[in-house]
Length: 313
Picture 1 (cartoon, helix red, strand yellow):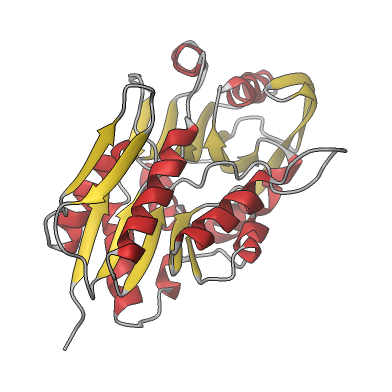
Picture 2: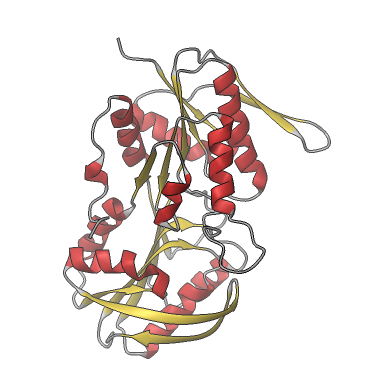
């Protein structure tokens, strides 16, 4: 007899969790979030989870309350005798702190991994980690999905002549190169030097983009400073058009204004993070079917390799 599956949402990902549950074929479970006047809060399940395989959906976007709410929900499921607890974290926050790149800094991604494990999670599902090695920070299974299974067909559907894939920086060259190989097109690179986080000192283009339709590939777009400046630079180098494909639409600060005023034809993102604004240039692809399928296969111990497309190229 199959174990009963229940899907729950934390407050930052209610809409996404609802679409995932619908794609899975069931209703979201009932939860309650109570807040005290000083800002402290507590989470609880309003239905039994004893002996169930429990999925808890929450992208750990700032503020830190979102991460802590996920931890509380995992702990509550453990103490309520859930059989298995799977943390579904479409956007894994603090992933940019994946190494000690200067003296006296924390490795935030490792700390978050430790906390998720300590709270009682048996498995983690996520998408397009900022750094692949973050999987190794966990001692529990990690299903690391790639949005390429959504983005690659979309790029093909555009049927662009003279297509070229581009990386916004050296760090994204591996990801962009996988797209270029899969689509059998050339690769360009935007080399940047930073003064500090979210501030660029200089940028140059490596590769011939003249007369080409450029598609920039990245895992996230935050303030959109790098992205919009890259797009301008590609156009200055003679590109016909510039689009961008970014899995996680963080889109903080002046991001929407920059995108609306940019030379970008289109920005394609997924709904791992709820949009905080509007732009006619932004297209959102839904990840519900992908996550629901992987959730079903994880429960039935089936392979999920068909969701990796060209991850290993």
